[in-house]
Length: 221
Image 1: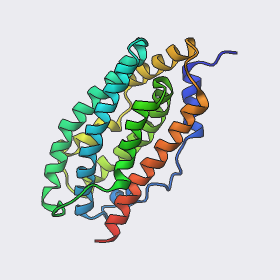
Image 2: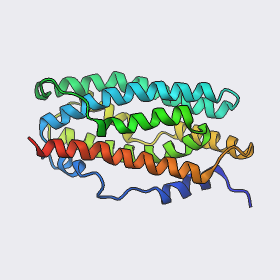
Image 3: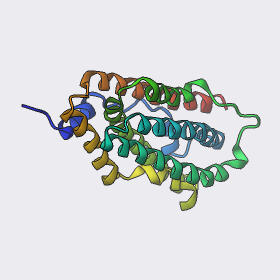
């Protein structure tokens, strides 16, 4: 029996679900124990990740011009990154006083963006779409918990939390676009599920590395 895009997404979510304890920084933020300097470092790292991801998604959209649904999905992702870039400014401003002097991005934090850029150049777009869709669910959960903690433990305003709010809630429209892109690839026999899972596993590993580096930075304060 031919599998549907929804079934592939559900299978990938099950296989690629991260270790619930993988993000060591999240519990610190959740109870208000992370240092303000660490929150400022998070803003600085995200600035570079967003800029890189936006370009990567634009490139993926260009690569799959012959696959309208796939191009639509990556175009939507690039547009979302533009919104995220605008919203990040208020969060960064709220952290400004705690920003470490002369802060430089960490390789472990930028590994995720570097891998997304690699996928933009080398990955089959439909496989990348499946891998990213699963990873976004993990990122969204982290954002929801961080937004809650920033308000209740750190006293951040709604404007300062808007960056995390953007990703905290599921996006039915983006989910629909992802499903359409994957179904389009299935119908054209252009999707390799195992390769997509490999991409997804590596994305999750880089996601974990991002948070682990910030957790280590927090412990050095």
